[in-house]
Length: 342
Image 1 (spheres, rainbow, N blue to C red):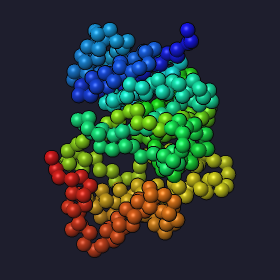
Image 2 (image 1 turned 120 degrees about the horizontal axis):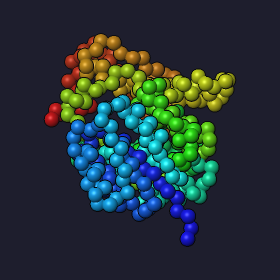
Image 3 (image 1 turned 180 degrees about the horizontal axis):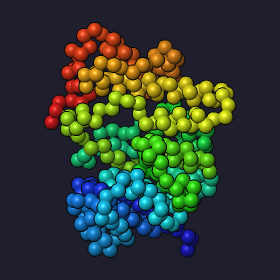
Image 4 (image 1 turned 180 degrees about the vertical axis):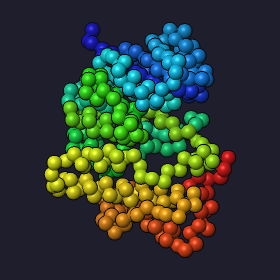
């Protein structure tokens, strides 16, 4: 009988009683059976632990690690890394739903490609009630690839990340356990905040390639929130993505054609991001707006539908915030972005 690698699935959890059942149900129903599942509960105050225990009572291979005192999400996340074991491991989120063949597909991918250190998959997006709302964006270079199983070199992953942003769905990634525990060791959330995962992908490729399976094998949950909740969370400053991109650029030893190209891609993403934050500033009644360099980014608009779309959004945004009566449009912008209050 051929060896079947052990896969360790780690799940950080905090007050996820509404979703943890569906997540665990999708994992225990995988068509790959050599699994060890570990749930790390961060002192939940709801029924999360009770739901996990119900799966354990049914005989599923789940271990529950509990904290009596709540710690930061980053610390709980990094505990998952420290406790990972087996040949391969993943950090799945406690609100997503996984297709039955995700793990078997990923194990087969990494088994066949020994220089590949981790692999992600394409993702559907679902709302708070589990309804499909669309697909996660993936670069056209991956969409147009004849193969559904793609191995990206370090240079390819870096270029695509600078060109489109972080297209890797974090809770879809399966790692070689040795790389995650002994090289990556931690997600650097205190330094890179919400984009610490992108920093991990770049560090993974210091040791080998990064895989992508272009099949929607995860249902990635973006919960529908009330208008007031969304408005309160409206971001008005640059995305944490630029902490990672700028850190990478600053580490480069020389300015060459590749560096210049990555800087160009980064500048486009900044313009794209500031179109969003400037609209948020208008909605929130702020008087100052961030600079958007449309002129230097015009050439990028011709390279893909993605870039054309966001160039046009930035152009319209710049026109709106330049109007003398722009504050009169804030209610309209609020409705366009957030819809009706619920």
